[in-house]
Image (cartoon, rainbow, N blue to C red; front, side):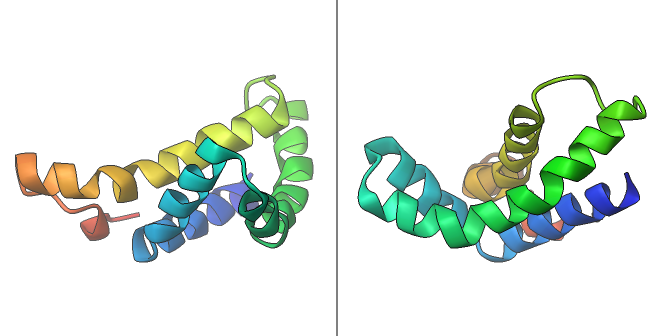
Length: 103
């Protein structure tokens, strides 16, 4: 579970540092064009292949809920992307920057 948490913290930090990545992936997903496959394979699959067994192990030990592991993964990806995607809005409405996070 510790390694899984560390992986998602690293993903969060990467997302904050490079918010364009999730924006690009979301844009390509909306049109489902060949660039999505081109980007998903090297960028997403290695992470998924590394994390799914860890998610399953955490589920087996009841540290995570018994949901489809890939759905859990994408819920976590969505959470990590939220601060980068809504960063400009948070800055405008509350003067809060996602880059200032303590995690």
